[in-house]
Length: 626
Picture 1: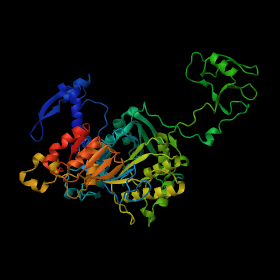
Picture 2: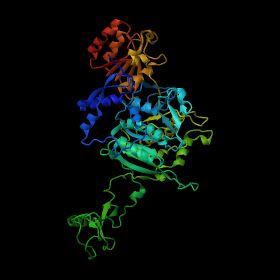
Picture 3: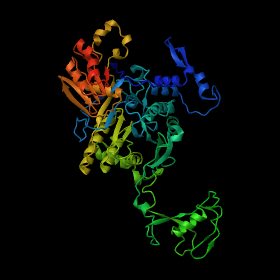
């Protein structure tokens, strides 16, 4: 049986092997900081292989950089030995029942960089849409501080909030000499990892304001590729000007949109509204129905676009206006005229225009880059929605910058489908507006979109809710109850709550060679004593790339608890003293994966017969131990 690694992948190591396979002549050996001889990539040889022109030294070139950028790349690639632990007490089942986990929605409490790393193998290429509303770096909001090199005593004085894992939030004031650097260091590794979550036809939307809009564009151009930039949407966030503004009254924010592959991604059309349809009339009672007239000339040169036409009134028009050309040839024009597709005006004497029928136009509107508040809501609407869902004893405790659900619903309408189980990820979840919007859209359309929300347990000013996670989770619960009561829709109202935590395994699991003989007694078991079989199950699921939302059933075989995940795709038993009867029954069920504890067999004979049992009943099953 193979041993599970139980840590996130080392992307730098993976990239090394890819380069080594493509350019074996660039592989060399060097001495690392510890004085050990290790394999490495010769940068000079690699540059010769990939470019005829080598840029080095002080030579000018286009680049986007900042202090610590290299560290941000290392941080994005570095593996972590952590896990996600289920909190049943906070979880809600599909029908809204507390404690249930029969739901496909996920809420994660913890640092989003850790969460993204833990999820990256499982959700690689599976997320249809990402939306984030990160800190805008206004000087008053908090950013994630990812420097784990400091000890607790060192960072306590300058840390805004922190936990036992070393995660911390720091208020990034403008007096900080690293004002932009710290913000960039936070966003860059998270976006690098998040990109790989997207499906090939996936898209990311990012809310941002003028403080860091230009920097965000540069980050996204580098991470997603400038060729995959789709739009910089302007959202009209307020409905009234502020006369107290020092210079201009700010009325908008931006929503940046990048596709995973802009050649593939296409937005869904928006519903045609009454105003759009009212532009089509039928003044000549054309049996083909309402139509709108369109210009038949353009400025672009067209060789066949210069000719005279004769109006029904008999007047000759020598050609289009000066500097313009007919958009169709003379033959096509005459064809349109015979089909009564040319409008000459009520008197038959006007400049010709083309009749475009409502029945011929696409049944939807292409999204525009200006989103007025009438269509997608404004900030006051967002606060009212939050207050209507969450009880705050003091109005000043209300989350400062929530987004209206209609804003997120517009993105869902553009980028997702109703009934294909699309996954939407928001790793700056805040007050969980995205989850609220998804439940609302699913209820209105009887859809099955799924969400993954991630939020660090940031402290709040509220006396009612100590952290943002408390607010977000309660909002999802109450929004689900309210929407179910109003619509009666049979959809998934639940969510499984997980918490980023240290690994379930003792240090000896990862570094057996560094464990002295006299230390082994305290690690007779390589699993931490406070961890449950359910904790182990979810770490195994992450390691094997099995969706956290998969169905989980518990059964008892020969007195031992066995987890069946995704209808028997994975069968796992973490009990001690597992008998041959249990092993045989698991093998008979032919799972794709079978997982046991390394020391779980009740005797040496069971361990000896283990492989033979699977070879007999299910030779294709992948057997793993931890």
